[in-house]
Amino acid sequence: MQRDPEPPAGLHPLLAGRFSPYRFDPSAAVDDHSLGLLLEAARWAPSAGNSQPWGFFTSRPGEPKHELVVRHLAPSSARWATDAGLLVVTLTRRHVGDTQLLYSEFADYDLGQAIAHMTVQAQAMGLAAHQFRAFDLEGLTKELCPNPGWAIISMIALGKAAGEPPQTRDRRTVADLLSAPWAPSE
Image 1 (tube, rainbow, N blue to C red):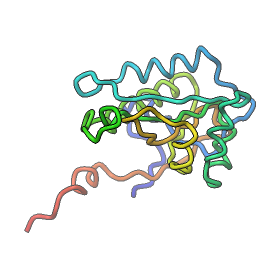
Image 2 (spheres, rainbow, N blue to C red; image 1 turned 90 degrees about the vertical axis):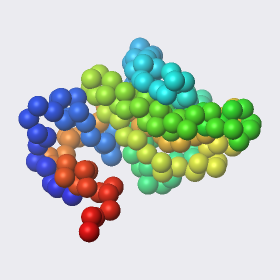
Image 3 (cartoon, rainbow, N blue to C red; image 1 turned 180 degrees about the vertical axis):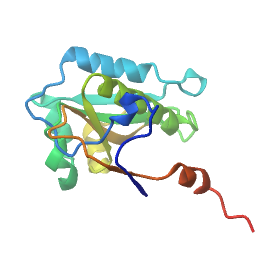
Image 4 (spheres, one colour; image 1 turned 60 degrees about the horizontal axis):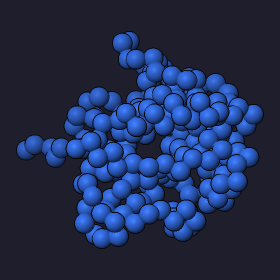
């Protein structure tokens, strides 16, 4: 890991300024218009064969369905995610109906693209996004009961970050990105 005091020159500001906060401002709501823009950003993401195999379950504080999600958060994520203005459960369509036939072998990758688009849109709107998997997957799946073929993958907390972004960030080096997946040559 390399500790970077600032991103390299030329990196787009939306990417350079992105971070995953561990504190959200509980008084900052995500309104319907903002929610619509976040979902539109995800909708416009690329996918294999234009299959768009993603789906979202959204909840905001004060909405009845918010408690359905919050009660399944792990203690580690409940400390900060409950203050976010929006919680998004992400799903992907992995199988055709209730069979084991693959819907798309790229479904998880495509969902990641949609989430990345949503994250950049959030940053452009002055919101922060923190993606996480610290929740009871089995319990949440039973609670939300997705349609056959669909699987819950992760969650995203979105809202106004509380506090300042970190001064430095630990990131792998570009050289590591290029060499890590390959076995050393002899």
